[in-house]
Length: 149
Image (tube, rainbow, N blue to C red):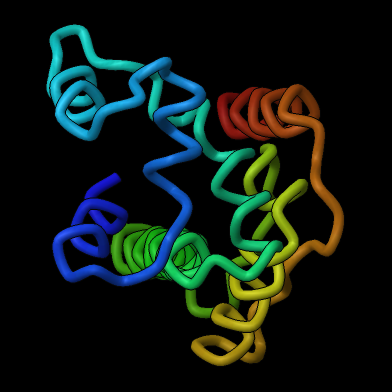
């Protein structure tokens, strides 16, 4: 929303505010801003499919939003990798597994995520398919049990 409002103030073309207004039932910009600032606020994450749709239709601001989402995910993975290396003396590459609708369902985010990780850490193994979260939890529990023995 922040990017869409900046674009609105700068008179840059975007359909985000119109689409969000339709979703939230706020036809006026003031109503949209008031709802967005309310407590409790609306479910901003629920807007992701609409932003993805607009980005795929060529909306430049929606595309920027998804590019930033991918960059944020890459930054987070690299931070976790750094902390694992520092705190656990890991010297090799840390494999990356992922799950969730954003990477799985949003092509622009997925492609930028993979490209960003490859650019920043070309040797890092990154799974190309989503994993089932329960499998990861079971794997972790098994590892913890083995370490306790």
